[in-house]
Image (cartoon, rainbow, N blue to C red):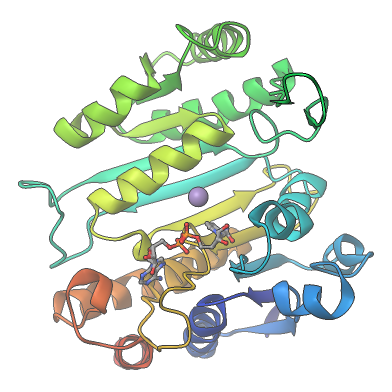
Length: 351
Ligand code: NAD
Ligand code: MN
């Protein structure tokens, strides 16, 4: 059978609960669709940190480099600084494997009620720049002991980096409604954001069927709440894309449902699939986490691996279970992680 090698990093908190849910469902789909996934479990994350002083082995990137994909839960521990956990694992993987696209689709799943009135057919994709921008370690530092102590944080936007994310977003927009919104802040951030605007508009000019709107990110946040149906594909920098995608996921009911794909479009390196939520220490260990974001991420992974039928089968199973009213606590239901996963497995088995 076709076999895919997938590195599995469950990581911290609810990652340990939702990742096993995803592997069970993927294995069930693989059986039905005639392929096999060879999982390589990596016990990396904060527990590894407490033992070894780092989030993953020194040669972690090399270890992952010959796999077909990476399925990640989340990292983040209440007793570790967040920049240690993120920069020790997640961000190096995104950068070393040049996963410069972070694709974050959101739609309202069947039967789920948005916190906003009249929002039941939301369908938005955020294309977040994933390897540069405001997430930067170069140049900046904290100037301790200066007469006036200060922190300097640099943001880096290269023409190459902005061009490739804009191109990806324009192609995606062309394949959908043709509407592309670019998040900017060129009124306040006076070097990087005008440059972002300039590069994005020059790229999108070449796409006849695509209409580009540049919107200031603060106004965009408000517009997404007031008129979410005006938006289809949104392209945004690393920081803005992160914030907007949590906002949009919440419009669709819960951040527990939203997936992401960290993609290396040339396929020179493995891509990584993870829910947008974090390790949720407030609910970890209780068996109540919503596995949907992880399952949907696994569906994006199956699509990327070249198994679109299995990917679609996974999404129909989620839709079916949601429509049947089986929902976790974040969506107002009473199903636990296991109940929800078992229902998805039944839906797969009966499809
Ligand atoms: P979070 O996403 O972990 O949780 C925010 C809120 O949403 C919490 O109330 C949580 O219970 C709820 N929630 C999240 N996912 C859920 C799910 N699947 N089902 C039900 N409820 C869910 O964000 P946070 O609390 O800001 O961060 C916690 C830790 O996770 C921090 O250490 C942070 O740095 C880390 N984090 C990691 C990633 C990542 O690994 N990619 C992303 C975001 C945050
Ligand atoms: Mn985030």
